[in-house]
Length: 86
Image (cartoon, rainbow, N blue to C red):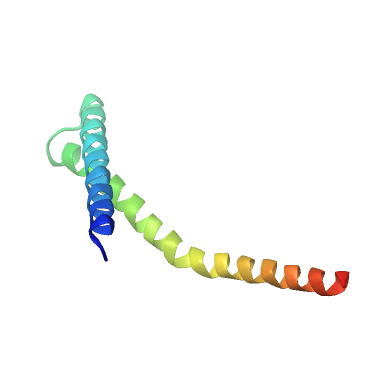
């Protein structure tokens, strides 16, 4: 990995952490505005972010086989069409 790749990875990670922090602050303010306080007011944003992260990882794990199947099928159709056209 060269220096440019490291800069891209670190800047992306920093941007994601920054957006997540702002979203957590906004969600915490929203929860507190609706009457929750203490630990509940602090933990709701973390649980929402945790659920988003977990569902993203599950989608990433489940999506690759589906994408590979669709890509393989499309390649097969392109080869079949090229063979039938000649």
